Image (cartoon, rainbow, N blue to C red; front, side):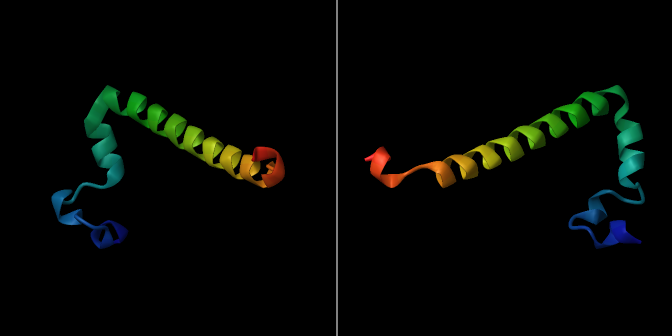
Length: 62
């Protein structure tokens, strides 16, 4: 079972991640939404920084 190979899986007992999500009840949906928004923002910022660094001309910056 894949859950047993995860670090700290012994803390979860026999519960799967979906079981923990269900036990978390209504607070899990906002946490999931915020997690997706955070990941989206981080990826967008990384792409922005890479594009900005690629398009800069060192002569103009100085």
